[in-house]
Length: 158
Image (cartoon, rainbow, N blue to C red; front, side):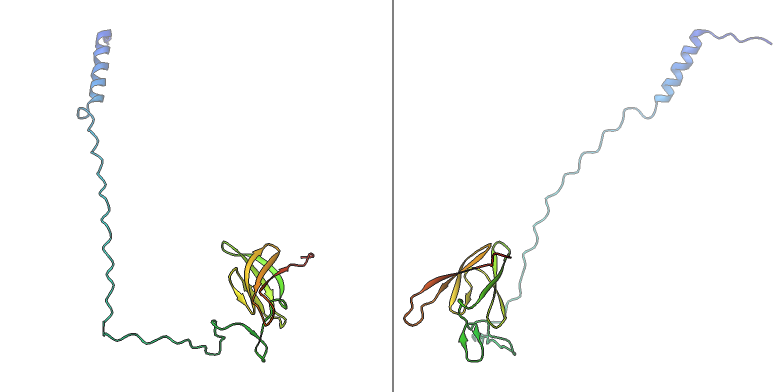
């Protein structure tokens, strides 16, 4: 059998041809597609509310119907004889943190509890200030007495 003699040049040409064929794939790589331009969202359509029929007549006044509940617009009274609560008779039972302010928890002599914030009225007084351990009322003048201020404090053992 005859031996085939290979020359170094033939090996180089074969390797170069193989590399050339492996690199062929359609020329230069494709350019990326341009980025899609995001469109600004269209503003929402205006809300069209149906118009109420204009009959020219004024609307009737709205009356509060208590249906067995206490009228929230009347002062708070204690007992059957309609004696108003005196803030000097109520007891401060706690102070809690409310949304953005402190709230005072007070108990009337009959055991009914009230949650008060600054500006609330209870009986003959109006809450002027609440601290973590006290509540201050501005008390209305009665008879020959002048208007005054009353501060209720939490007991020390709480």
